[in-house]
Structures are given as structure tokens and as C-alpha cells.
Image (tube, rainbow, N blue to C red; front, top):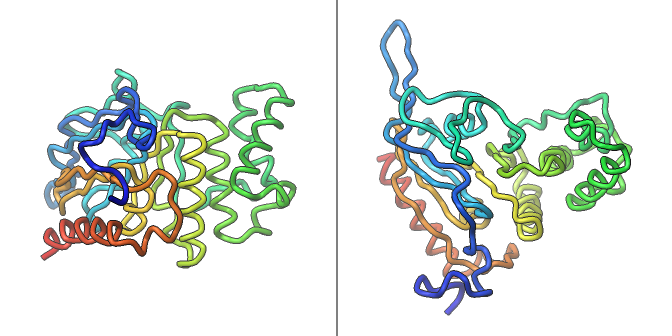
Length: 274
């Protein structure tokens, strides 16, 4: 059988990606209501999910279901009007160093080189320069940009800029990396190569990732677990564990098991949009 049988012991080496730790983030009964003069809009209702250490979570759902809103709440950039979001047994009350964020827009400092951008958070921590240099070099190499360390953002392609943003976030060693459709603006070929790169980085460093996307194929390729959200008011419609090989290449997308799972997720979303 290709991949992993659901009855297989999750501690077996063949299923390393399912060998996860304790709860990192808990979303409990979250509600989000936007108040306006013309009336209230219920964006999310009774949303529940759990992120475990070392997981790669993908959140997917119809447009307007609250995916990005939920991610912003996980980052502490927005807040629920009901329910709670807990990180490490504490209610999230704002941004924190334990949670790194990568947006669809590159958000790089144009006056800084690649290396300076990656070291920005490390400087804020007043880390010794030698340690800054070592960490920056490690993550610049991880995203394949060692030849561009002294270049400025204006000299980089879109995909390269997003690599810098990922390296900068990872260099701060967050407990959780939050990613809001980071590859949405890239062309299909660059997007596929970035998906592969991110998956390889995750396999090496095992940083817990929560990744929002509208791309079903992307979610199935990257994730160890997918949360499918319903149409507005958004809530978790289905939790789907992804039992595919730990080591993944782009050829995986052509396999019967991959296509079957992609169709399953597509069916859940499509049924909501009818």
C-alpha cells in the first residue's frame, strides 16, 4: 500500500510526520462578528481546531470563510468576539515571538540586503553579531539564496523575495510559523518549486506550520493534516489527516492516492459552494 495505513502505529519511523508532540495552539468555539451600521456580519461561528507540535496544518475553504481572519487571530493581530484561542496554555492577547508570520506580500525592507532582512529580528533580540551571522547564513542556505545574500529586494524575483521572507521568519525560531497564502501571487512553476522547498525545509527543521491556502493541490501536497472550513459563517467542516509519504516530491501529485485525497477535499468545498 502506498503511504500510511490509518491503523499503523503512529510512533513507527515510517510515520515520522505523525509523531507529534503536545498541543501548541487550541481554537475553542471561536466566533467572529463584524459590527456595522447596516447590521452585524457573522464571519465565523463555533470554530474549533488544535495544532500539535511538529504538525504541518493547512486550512482551506471557500472564499470569505474566514481562513485569513483565523490566521490573523492566531498571530494576535485580530481577536475573536467569542470563544478563545490559546497558545501554550495562555490566551493569545497580541503578537508574540513564539509565532512567526509570512504574508502573501513579501513585506521585506527594501533598503536592506537579503542578509540584513534575515537578521532583522535577531538584531532586535540584541543577539551577538557572530550568532546573528551564523543563523542568517544557515537559513539563507536553507532557502537556496546564499549567492544573493548581499542583494537588495529590488534585484530579486517574486519567488526569491518570498524565500527571504520565509528565511527571516524561520531565523527567529518561532514555535509556530503562520503562513497566509504565501505563494498565491506566484506563477505556477515558481509556486510548485516553492511548495517543494517549503516541504523540504519543514522535513529538516520540523517547525510547526499553520498554512492558509485556497489551492487544494497545495494543501494536500504540504500538509500532515487539513482543516476544511465551511462557507460563511466559517467553521471547521472536516478534519482530514494526510496519510502520504514523509519524503515528498512533485511526482506525488500524479499518484492515485494524491488525486483521491484532492478530490475528497474538493468535494467538501464544492458542496459548500453550491
